[in-house]
Length: 147
Length: 94
Figure 1: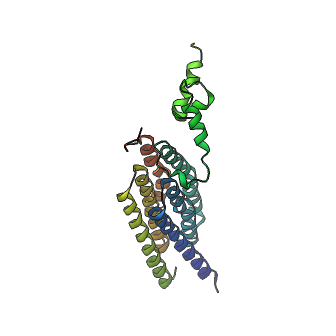
Figure 2: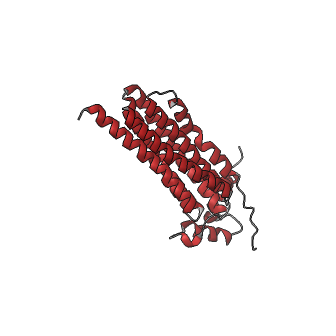
Figure 3: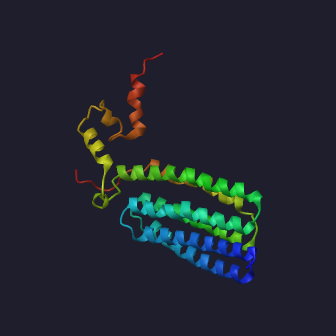
């Protein structure tokens, strides 16, 4: 068995499994009950599927010149996917697009309850609680003395 | 890639990605919330980049490689922007 055929077969396997990741995400999008579990499914083609597809492409092109470009593509995806997942998950939690009965543990719930019980908003819990981190930066700004 | 293997890979990947894109579009239409739609659009974008990569691998060229890098770079901006401005429009009991 020559090396070219072996690399071709590996590349074909990578491409097909990478496409299967997209199919898994699609099935998860259709069948999972709420936003957070759908987010779990949607990450598969974005990170692992893309890694498999780029590996397949690299095995097919067989040129060292494209390897940095493929690595950059995957690294940027790895950097940007958590950002969008964080933002979507945060606004999903705040607008209550989740089913509490499917959660095994809700660590943010105690913080939100504490913040709701402290309407003055000067407690440490309120800073990360109901108003969230974007607004929570304001008390520290107010405490800073004027120049 | 040999002719028969390339054809088989192209057909298999095209079928898988077609089903995935259809499911993502169905989720985009059905919602129920704006965030579900944003998530489905993200999956649709990754299906598109998967199709670009597969086409490059099968036909053995690298014309769209920069496009794939750009999709990976800026693909998150849309969902971040939409997620920042989501408000809850459903009726509340309190």
